[in-house]
Image 1 (cartoon, rainbow, N blue to C red):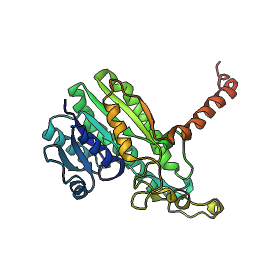
Image 2 (cartoon, rainbow, N blue to C red):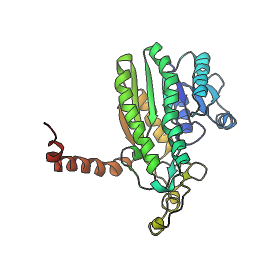
Image 3 (spheres, one colour):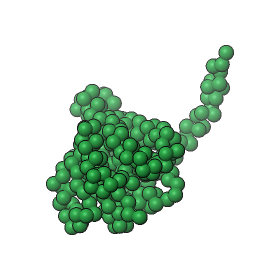
Image 4 (cartoon, helix red, strand yellow):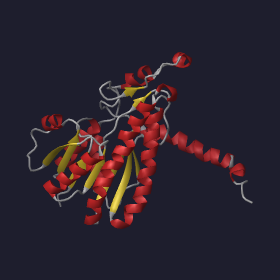
Length: 276
């Protein structure tokens, strides 16, 4: 059966690659993003009966509701949601302004929730659906110099895991995908944002732009291969609830997870000392 995909953040990077992969396996796609002209240019060679372009800023709940309504009007259903729109705010905790912090969560968490609230009623009516929420390895192991990006992705993880339990009886499966470093524009100045405050005490230890931006264009991960993994998972009878993606991902997060287990046992006597 031909499935209908709804992909946010489709104008670049992983979003673009996922749209292409879904089309390559014969499915149809609703490709959304803030720049609809760019979407039309990226997928100009795709037959119009296979793809629909919709403008969507995920921070706007009315836009999310409207885009989902248009998608259903066009294709009749939504089988796979890829909640991909997001960006990274880089810099230390104290360097980010309150406005920057709020904007990071407005896109990465609340924007994702806006799209979920619009799509879930459709999937509940269908009694079926697949959802992929884009998290990050930074949502498993917090990354210094990306404090609030990490915080937003930890929040995505929590929301995704709870949601997965809530909707599983309704025939809907949910996965948090946790990519490592992939060669997209994610760390470029066109995408990444940096804390605005300057604090002298941190100067000897470097800054986020110097530490992370040099990786732009050097990442080992291939977005096209990531997209193929997403398509493969969508074809499984049972999706994983969390999925690390990238050769660097396991090595990056496992020491942190193992350390947490060791530390839990180390301080177990304190943990268990609180009963009446």
